[in-house]
Image (cartoon, rainbow, N blue to C red; front, top):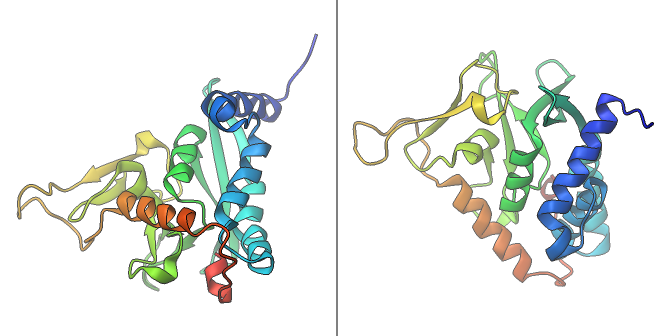
Length: 217
């Protein structure tokens, strides 16, 4: 009889989820193999030195992620980031299925925790757009991607915790159909931005580009 720890069971479920989604079309059958695939996809347009820097940043962050089982069935992925205010490591928590959706959308850069101002108690989990040097919108909040926020809409969390990115905790605020319903300053369809930048990067595969240090995030 086999005995599994919670983390081992979470990984087994994650492997099964990846195999169901990507096994037939891409021959990817484990979570570890999917991480390798992301690294390869995200660096296919770069020269070897630049590719190593990306894998050493975003790729290394993904490999430090923790998988846990919640409520007996839901796999939660916790991703480590640095809080610049405290110097401590903080963890964004998100359902694995949602995380896979976001990665497929193009949110495969390093995720980072950013305070919008010195006086704000909490910040936002953000990620850079692929090929960010080619667009004026360099990054977006992960919460906006989860709820598919458009221009004039905000993504908020029910519990006020920006690290809790479970789909049931993130909600959309604002109605783009009326001037009165528009909220916030966002002028971008965040998901469309990432998808467009991802398509651009894929077209440039094999180009052997290099970049400055900041792009590696």
